[in-house]
Length: 474
Image (cartoon, rainbow, N blue to C red; front, top):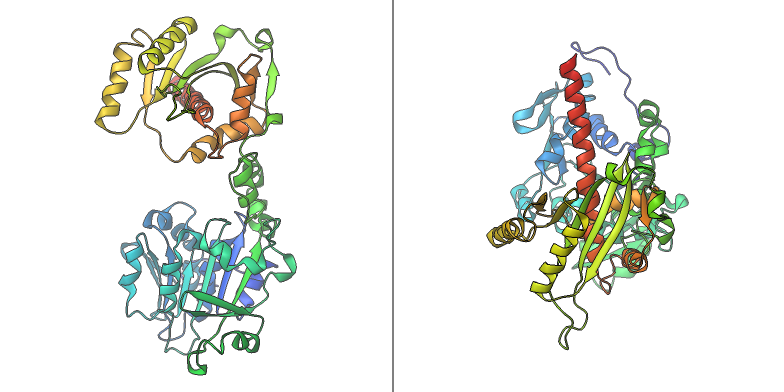
């Protein structure tokens, strides 16, 4: 592919899933599986086959505008392809214009109601990047806009990574082994047919088989089956990436178990559940004297996850107040002590004060700050009274509990977390391995994850400061 302003460059799909995707005649194709399998690339080059056809229209959707413009996203990837076929970028409306007069537009559907902005539209090629980010309603509404008078049969292409809680997981269930969660290799690329009647979707291996299922529910005039297939792809199917960035696989391998199974293994069934986030065999035990450095050299923080309720007849099993004392040395983490109690508000604060005195003023103290002005006032009160004279910080938490626990989970799995032997070990590990089962408390996980996050940020901050100092010395 060439143009007068760009040197020659060969742009072609790689053998395997990318070629299957671009050669399948199905009306709708979902291309999914591992991260790094070349999904955005095939979504972008697919409409180029018709870009010269008068009246051809193409829209490629991402859920939000920043996702379109992020480095490595649709816009930056398209800059490596479209100039070679004469495309001219128009960033103002996120569109590429081509010599034929046609264009390929990128758009977002951030809100459910955003789909209504396309009422009356006629789009021959519709692409969805990361389909699991879109709602089922958005997808099927846009299908009603998939029409054409240019002579090219309207069609839809989509990409995604596995998400067991997305409507897509159920939609492609025939192509996925429901016991293991992995795609069934011999079904990848096999075309089936479906019709939607009301809220139900009916499937058949052929249009004849499908008609036999629905002939009592709809008339032949309303019977318009759609052909569909799912094509699975893995990182190994994209040697263009693995040869340029051989370390990418290693970065995927360093992810926590659930994310690793989804993004590297292409598993559509795995969820964060008890036994997946933390495993008892991941922890290393040692005596305090076996810590491989002077205890004074550890960067230490005691992080609190607070509650202030004693068991009573109305609430016999309230949350615990947990204080995790964690130290860090050369990228390894040492859990030195865990305080655990259920007390009244006054007794809780007194126990926290006593623990601070026991730890000493070289140990930093942290706790979660509740949102709003009341949370800010409460944090300020702790700073000025209970922890006066200590290095104390209160932080607002971001994201859900599972997301916050993932970096700590990954550190545990990679053997970077050590537990000093103590009477608290059993309760602590028992809580972690049962996370995120709602029947069990998660206070230990919250406190340990926050302590790990804080110490990790301190490491990165020190590295950055060291780099700045070295630069100035030059």
